[in-house]
Length: 505
Image 1 (spheres, rainbow, N blue to C red):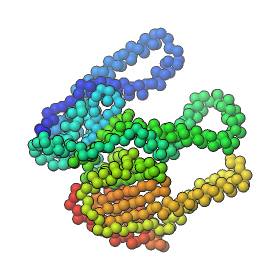
Image 2 (image 1 turned 180 degrees about the horizontal axis):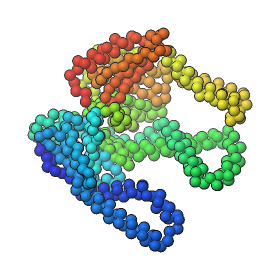
Image 3 (image 1 turned 90 degrees about the vertical axis):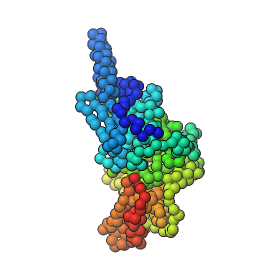
Image 4 (image 1 turned 120 degrees about the vertical axis):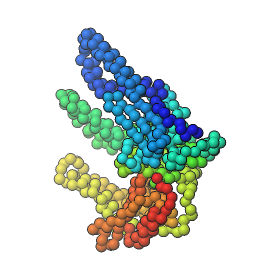
């Protein structure tokens, strides 16, 4: 590899003009589509159509000219003397962005459907952890994307030491140790066994939005709609119809979830070489991310009883990031078998030594009582609405049966969930386990903890309990209602973070 590569001014591929042009047309369409729809529906005259066509032609030519000028003004290069990557862009006002090598946190690839059609990549340089935003080159060839990514990551890792790398060394580094591809059948299993509440909420939002639009634009026709719903309301009182409606909504919810899973995770592939692990996924926007152990902050492994039966686990990896970019730097990898999860952990925690001890802590029962009290709020609201209004036309026996069933179910679920909560402290890790249906296991290396918070709300003082929060650059790990027996271990955690010489960013 030539360390002086990209030291001169570089531009995107010529296909970048097409990408900029089509992207600009899409933005214009989003702005003016309502005006175009109005012209079509209003029955425009022939002269109006001619002038509209001429206007669109002129707008298209101007957009093409803008795209070419933007392409010419968009340049990037590596300044080895100042040890930074430089990008300049802008037509009417130019913007110059210089990223020091030591501020680069991640370099990864993205591809939209259009980019795949014209065979270009987006290369994204993430500067999370600093005040700078990420930098994106939207039209670069696969060869240049891989080469530039490798140079920038090597420059950061080696603190810009200029070395010649033999081809054999590069090939050894890039040699894939193992590859895992998630099949279409696995994606289907994920869609069927994942959370349906999101799909139901999308249906509710969609129906509400449609109703609001009808109410706004067709107010004069609402009388007929109201008559229909009045006649139909009597049918909906039937338990059979309600059950059928619920099943239909559930099936629709599952369908939405399956479609979402296929769009997000189509072509999900993981391959590991000596120094890094690469994850590629996505149908609408194909993303390729490189994972390195030093950037890992928190790792969550999630599953539910159905997925566990199917040997399906989801890994959520939180990378080092600034406070405002935490969500963006969480990578979800679903459809993993237990053996693949073990391989990922083995790679990400390869430098960890064996634990010298292990202590388990569970929350006080006061937390259970608070959870049960909060779970009772919905039934209290339901009873209040039924008692003070005629909005819920149920007999008293039906109300008592529904409230009783809810209370039994809520209390039982809270007790079972409470028993699953525990915090494990070992010589090298913190591990938090929780969940009744969606079971979650969070793992955090002690030396990556930035700080801890120990708080005691007023309602905990009588029982001498505390809440503990462990802060990292990729999010927080929280545990509530612990006895003060945890405090010596909090001090141990701070000690481990203080004495470490290992790099955690």
